[in-house]
Structure formats: C-alpha cells, structure tokens
Length: 128
Image (tube, rainbow, N blue to C red; front, side):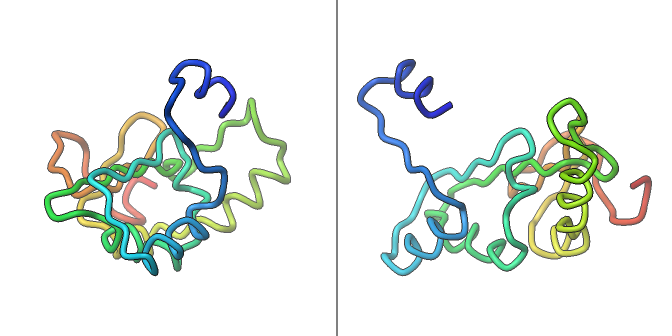
C-alpha cells in the first residue's frame, strides 16, 4: 500500500510504524499536527493507552477523525475467525467513549472525532 501511495503522490514521505511508537516519539519531540486521521477501521488497532496521545499531538484548532470498527462488525472477507476474535478482544468501547469528544455511528464504523457531525451518536451498550 505504501508503494502505491508513493507512486500516486511522488515527493511525499510516509512512515511505516505503529501509532503508539510514532505518537510517543512525536510527543517527546513536541511535534504537533493539524489533522490526525485513522480511516476505515485503522483506529481499532490502537492500544487503549495511546488514545491520550491524539489530543496531545493536535495543534490548537486541529481536528482528529478516527474510525474504529463498529460494535459487532469485522470485515470477514479479510480476517479469519481467530483474527476476528483477537481484534474483538482488544476493542474497548467504554474507553473510546471516555477518551474522545464526539462518537458517532457511520456505516460499519464508530467514528471518534472533535468535529460536530450530523450522524447518529454512539452510546456503549445501546444498540451495540
């Protein structure tokens, strides 16, 4: 995927690492970003302990938009039953609810963001 990114956008750099490793280094180096994005379920793989880094890494006025897999949804066309069980065991919807400003249900995803969006609000245990 990174090769395709570089082909489509020559001259732009990318970093191949986990969010946790990247965030810890960026926070210690006092780096700030205008946008933090984790699209199409990528945030599902963040360690719960790393949620604190999202707002620490934002510039004033910056936005974050994180897409977790919605409760009960796992892309079965990609993962085996054992992989889905492992992913499911890591998800902590209460922690997501506590850590982020706004939580919305959108298609197959739970969106955590600091943006106000016209989407269905997420409440853990309600419809999940």
